[in-house]
Amino acid sequence: MFKWHEQAQQTWDKGAENWHKSSENMWETGSRSTIIPLMQQFVPVGSYVLDVGCGDGYGTYKLHEAGYAAVGIDLSEHMIAFAQKRVKDKKLSFQQADLKALPFADNNFDAVMVVNVLEWTENPWQALLEIKRVLKPHGKVCIAILGPTAAPRSYSYRRLYGDHVVCNTMMPWEFKKLAQENGFNVLAGQGVYKRGVLEKEAKQMPEELQQALSFLWLFILEKQ
Image (cartoon, rainbow, N blue to C red; front, side):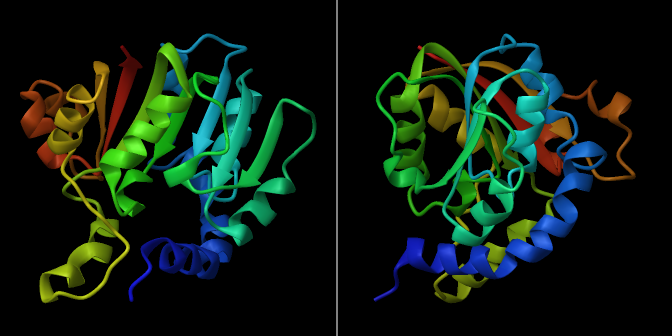
């Protein structure tokens, strides 16, 4: 019997070292460089923030450097081992945990950051409800969803043959609808594009066309 979460953990454990080699570049100058600046527009400094699917912890570290009290969780034991090396004080911590059952009380966090994580869950709807559970009323969530041009979407391709995969890709518009149907208001959306897309021109297009060109689509949500 195929066990999604066990297979996902093994996949990310195997990929942890390669991820660690590239994560700093992604957060500093690459596809993730605009995420925390967007969060800062909606989440006050000093807020208690959970980073779900933190990987090697670089994004969580960036939250801490920006003035947040940050907790990072990841399914991969090897990822968390890299992340633990970044801990310098009590306002930055990491632990291995599964998004389908977060080890935190209800209404615990001021904000949650979730970057390309829901695509790697067996049931994105249940994962979103778990994020909602640990978020305070009117708390904010920054969620990044892979856009149509993102190469990592290829990890779900073999599902077309009936093969077992651990990548549950969705379109940005699908996630927006899911969030709105499950107790979230959408406060903002922002695209990240590959080279060759003129961002200034893209921003003049309707949102659905902006999303169609995107490598990554960022959402800021508020819990109702």
